[in-house]
Amino acid sequence: MEYLALARKSRQAAVYELKGEYGDSLTRYIASTPQSRLLLNSPEIVGVRYTDLLEDAVVAVLANLPAASSLRRLDPRTIGVIHFLRGSLNFGMRRALARAYGFNVHCSSFITSQRERDAYGRWFIKDNQYRKIAIPPHATLFFADVIATGVTISNGLEIIVQLAKNSGAPIRQIVFFTIGCHKLEKLLREYSRRLKEIFPGYERTVAVYLEGKFHLADSKTAVRIKLQGTDLMRHPAILAPEFELAQYERLSSALERCVVYDAGTRAFDADDYLRKLEAYWEEVRRQAGKGWTLEEALRERWPEEEYRLPYDRFRAAKTAQWRGVGDAFLRRLHGAFKARWTKGFAHRAGTPKALAELCSLRLREIARAR
Image 1 (tube, rainbow, N blue to C red):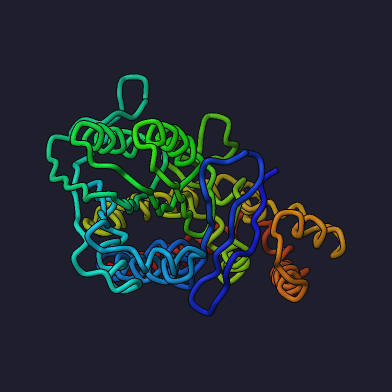
Image 2 (image 1 turned 90 degrees about the vertical axis):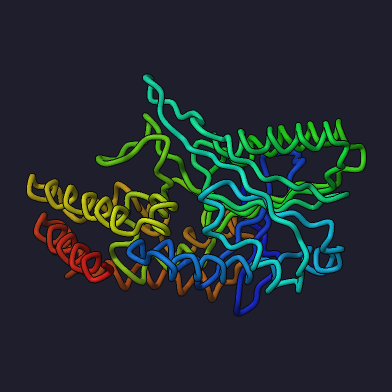
């Protein structure tokens, strides 16, 4: 069983080490910040505001990583930022390193990565021809991207590893930030193994998930509306405690199809992105018109099974999953569940009308974002 162990906590960020299940070659963290919680719970935030908030989240996490002091002491001339175009640009890693650690002369590299589906629905890289890559000596490489299938990073890491091997430029460590799923770890374990074989001085690979290690929708995911191989879902997933609590701040958050949707269009083609976001909520409203209730929709995407237990059993379940999280927080979380599920709310949630009204509210909110 995987679980979170609190590593560092401040007003800016909470960082948990993800442990269990593997005798691991990776150091894995799930980190939560006010900015990333806002972004993932409010998908109508788009454009420059979206990228600014995401960069702010990365800065906060960099400053609060357990290894922050050792990273800050690195020679900036050994630091490289690898951008997979265009998704990596959203995270603002180059500026985030400058803001968090004071780096100024760290280098940046760029690789195009245009995905398409084949005749069988599988993703492949159609275009990766543009490459501007510089790997510094004894490099610490920082990456950031949204990870669903992992096709983009598999392609990009292969290019980087082969270039480093052929040029004799040793890589010392990799730090990868993501809004993503388990596919990141599978790939990083493989490339970590290869880098250790190629470069005896290779030290470590660090994976940092923002807010959770999310579930990638697949053929077995039992929800009415989904994009297989694309949607990153809140359930079943390993979430930061703060992000789980944040699901009770806004009713619609847990019903979103994906925690981030299309990160590229969300930043750089907001009109197209918002049209697709509207289309999702219009489809949910159509389902309500066929009799789907708000309670059914919530149980599908946010079932809350452990919340329905007596508090002592709820606490036991959560403390097994989240080590170092105190009773006061757990009582607040359980209280948020009870505050939502009043008798009046439960009665309304059992009707299609409640779901249709929520959809109409979401559509108005999305329209105001234009």
